[in-house]
Length: 165
Image (tube, rainbow, N blue to C red; front, side, top):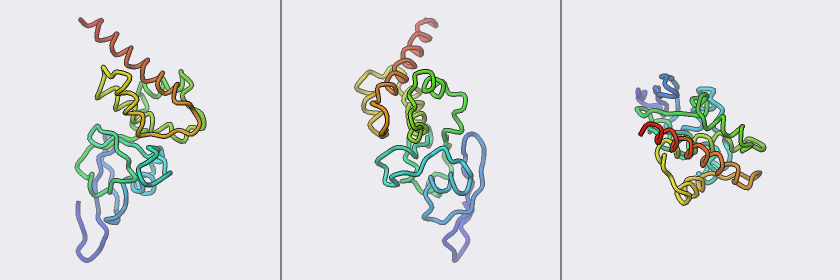
């Protein structure tokens, strides 16, 4: 990070979706703003801007993070994954196959969060799934389809593990 003397702007390098991206940001610019407005990655949605809805969820160092609450200058040396970086994720396919999409506004945040859940907790029980899904809000579905996605992927990862034994 190179902060210019006497200014409130910084020239930063962010590690997004496996690539290094450069941006000039104000010290107060959120990660969400930087991703959308400076880097053109519009998958993370701007909605509540106070961390309640999860529409802006991205992975920072593998952990789900509400990008509206993180400053871009705080995550300079950490790997960031957005929905655009999960093109080949089985979670994306499962959301379509299980009809876990309605209007689609919350979907990128849910997919990122569910990807992290399956990656970080491959043997998650129902209570853990419920807890993880509480960080995202959907106004269109009853969440059952989203739970079905997670459970189907947990079952398939469990089956693939059993095949290796």
